[in-house]
Length: 485
Image (cartoon, rainbow, N blue to C red; front, side, top):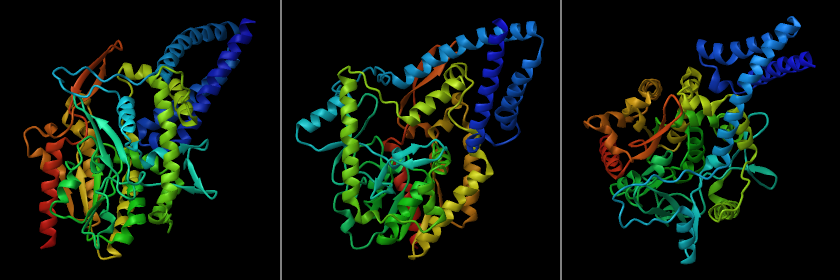
């Protein structure tokens, strides 16, 4: 009996590392980036799987002893990891840290604010972003959750003419904004402008995340260029930005296209977007959805999403048990447990940036996206301006990410300049100040000690604050004025 159990342990270990190897092969974009990654993600699981199966030929006594050692080490580790992973996935979101001196601030939760606005007859919706429609498939690709007439459909904006509950900064009240007639963060009616001067593409920084309406840099630039359109959306990476440009740009034909690259997330977002075949068709084909004429479809589909989220939100707030684990979350949960991710995080052995993002092929893919966007802009006589925004985390040495961001900056700027694009490097602008971190919103960041004890600090690691947006706007307006001469 003991020998049979030992054989079962060896077989399970072999199968486990074989499956882990298959996962790393399928997800090679994030794991194949150099000698160390090959050793860690490919050689090690291959060797351990082989050793496990070869171990079935060992002497019975030795086989039993090794199996017992593996069993009594692995079971407690995976039990602890399972508890940590499941509690994080299914548990309530962490509470906002208590901020002293936050007097006269609206203390309502997001759901309470949402409900209060709706009780006042305001048709408020949660913020929505194109990346949220990606559903992970079993083959590792991501497809849109929406179809129209049996054809995959991918909205790039939000619902039209609605109030969006955006976010709340530490110690402040909730911020909302109105969407325009195509679901973007612009003044309503702006699409009726006879001719557009400037079009902005980007992620949450461009969208205006967590600053009041009228205080984001696009709104501030609009004072100098009134006919300016903002297509920035939270979570947009380069491929989704290209999709937005190709859907809306040829219709409005702006004089300038501002391509705003975010050091903080664009390379990781591009890694995810390259697994979205529908989105990548905007780079490799002539694919267009003609979204300008399909706002009714977008509003109908996103209304269903908004109501679904509201029901789940209300259930959580009222203490009901909600099973919100979809297929993507379930797969992610299994992978977390298999890799002992939560335990490794507490011992400082897991990071949130993938060195795989630094591979040349990913920077070359970015260059291909930029060239396609540049060619599209030139086709109507426009000029594409490349704007580099630094990550606030590069200014916090304790996070250990400065070298990573320096490499991103060097590789991205090299490719933008090689394409001959006019470049605005906001890193230089911010670093002309003695405290560049002061241009960013402060957020709670949790550090873990060697023994896993959490310590939360309030650090400038968020989006631009109002001062940051003001500096960015002035820099871009000055650069556009020079280009116009």
